[in-house]
Image (cartoon, rainbow, N blue to C red; front, top):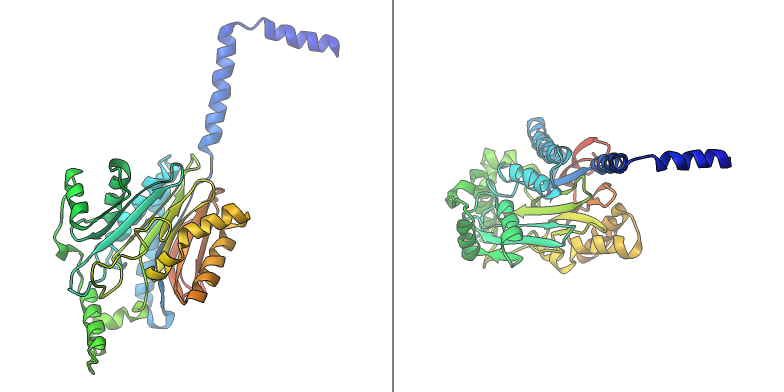
Length: 357
């Protein structure tokens, strides 16, 4: 054994410095390869609420499942190509902001005055840096402006006209508020105002468009995404049009860091959807991550403690999607449904709408 040990030692002694450099390079290459294989995952939502299967036709269900799949796959492609979790979140949410099926961007709900006001936020878990925007009326993709705030502003949240001045300075083009408006959302506003005024004949009783979408008439919602990339960095983002018939510059939880959006590499990332006033008061997104960190519980358990217990006791409806530091994905909601999808660390795509899915 001593002879063998001497032979091994002598073999190292005859290596030149160049041999040692080569060994070091190969070793570091192996480490880099291992880092590249860190699992990635993404989870998304398109709003939660009273989504009724018995009122949703098969064509509409196919349409929703298709856009949820497309958005999830778009974000996942960014991750598998080595892109950042933040880029994956933006790729996903931008697609959903462009779809009239969701309450974000084109197709967002009307405020009381018949206009569209949009909110969004994004946060990265590595630095705990964040960007948020609220009460936008002319920005085509609010999530991209929230990201610009994160990157190029010393502030966390910008609102209204000031946010749009900042957008122009960053090279964003402004669009007409009419870009966001759809007939479906206009009719929803008319119906709510008619109810407030106790009008006997409500618009949807004779309108085929509102009948078509009555399956999610009471959906509370936003769109959102959470992802973890090959570096183990988590990012979360949320975008919304808020509540139909909202007044006085109302802002919900979507742009509030810690309420509708939160990300921390040490625990998890969360994007929320629901009745924003309650989600702000309960600090939902941060509370879930904090419970994981302080109690040492799983992402699913932390979500359920907040959504199924805390929010229910407050009388709030809604849900969350999340990804933890080990690339586990989880959903939790206390309503009849939530538009949701994910690709887990094993590459498995799941798309769901109803509670019983």
